[in-house]
Length: 273
Image 1: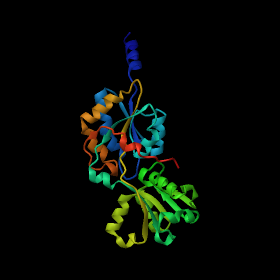
Image 2 (image 1 turned 30 degrees about the vertical axis):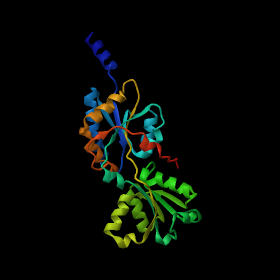
Image 3 (image 1 turned 60 degrees about the vertical axis):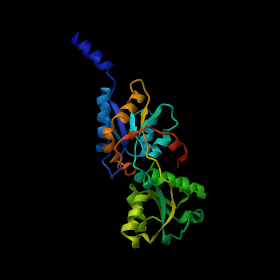
Image 4 (image 1 turned 90 degrees about the horizontal axis):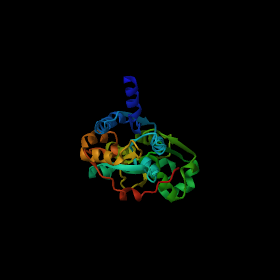
């Protein structure tokens, strides 16, 4: 009888809450995610399981497939699933204004590549080597892809397209001469100009985006996943926010969550490459 009762209790227990994001070499995303996973597990009385996907694109695919329950997204991953009816944005890190202003993407070229403006790209793309950060990087791939389309071309028209892996590596490829044009976040470009103006003088900025919002925490609606309650937990007690914010440059300095504002995201149209 006892064995039957234990079996019934185990069968009735909900599965572990899968809390996910994507990995990035510069940050310990598992450490950043852990406090939020523990907070939600304690509030819901659930075991939790952390999941680190390889890229933002992989994270978006896992969300769409219902393979994770809660996810800290970047902007690109969120936009990929924003219209999915089972996906609910439940909280956003309250990013300081100074950090939000700095989060932009840039397109930078080697001066020796013979490209001085965006208007030069359609006629020169076939001989240019293009470096991006990684699939699904907002500030290191997708906003630049949108800008390139506006200029009349797609990344596929370049002589070569490579994934550098990090924003710093994409910039380094320009400096090393292994890329002619690169997409990355403005932060390493700003740092290079401040610390090594001579090196920066060998490069030319072609394009700079407007400030980009950070991706929200999303919940995948299911019978065992109370999304409204999860949002209330995060917004009511921001204990996990400061640690989560340490995992992304675009959320640096955030110490609390705020409610999701759809108006900040509806203005973006970042087509897939």
